[in-house]
Length: 349
Image 1: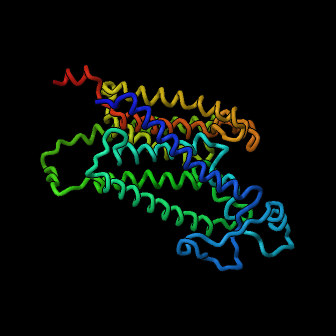
Image 2: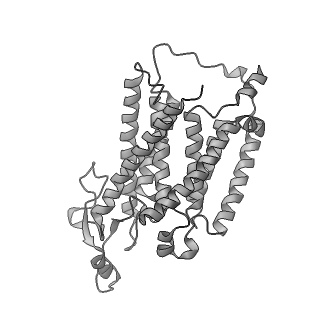
Image 3: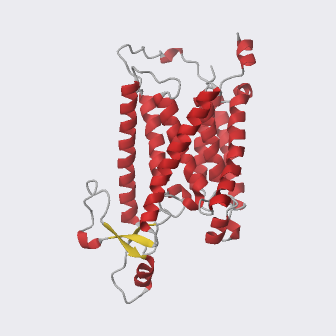
């Protein structure tokens, strides 16, 4: 049964507010830096004390001082830049950076907690424990990633996050998604004393050939699409980030809607939610950028135009589209509107 409209609206509002609050934390980190760099404080050693040495000692130094020292051939001791304003919140491509926490919170609330209409009091303690474990794992993983980034950022003017896909905020939320899927697959939030027996694999009827055929067909399609987008400067020049999200979309799409067109045609409602939701999201962030002047949409962007040139004003479009296709596809599943239409289900009987 599809979720009630009031619950649909409640779920969307809650995950949106949580995402906005989460992004606000990262924006606060950027505001703390202001017009300064966080540089590695080598006077206190290489490893740092915070979180068991996962983060180095850092200090804030004005950008003009850092740039002057790092560009002066007579200065032997160069600053190692750890981060600067923009590395965490990704305001110039806010529409992209906002999409990842949206997906993360949707998975956490709808698929793990069962919010808003399937919160089981018996399983709730286990599910809250699962979310706590996911959060801790996500933070630890990202401390490791930031530690590695600091170690490799040896170029004097290097930034940890110089493209949208590598913002620290995206790293945290991507790890949250990954661990949520892993914990769900392990069944850590649903286990009880009456476990059902595993199915006998000898009775499975393989459909591998058809699945692989259509999976590679979709992968080929998104590969061509990504090449076209990159050639027309509608995606990041380094296509790896964009392309990886399109690959994730293919995998999730086949899991949600089936592995061939004969299944997709019966799930028009869910696919319509995915497409229409994405098409409505793009103008929302476009208008948000025009209203704020600081939160970039990631496409048709005056902020990107100013920073990277007019030819790069749309380089975030590919990521915007792929991320929000995933979000609205997951949302259609969360509100239980991704299945076959009622008429198709009746025909089956």
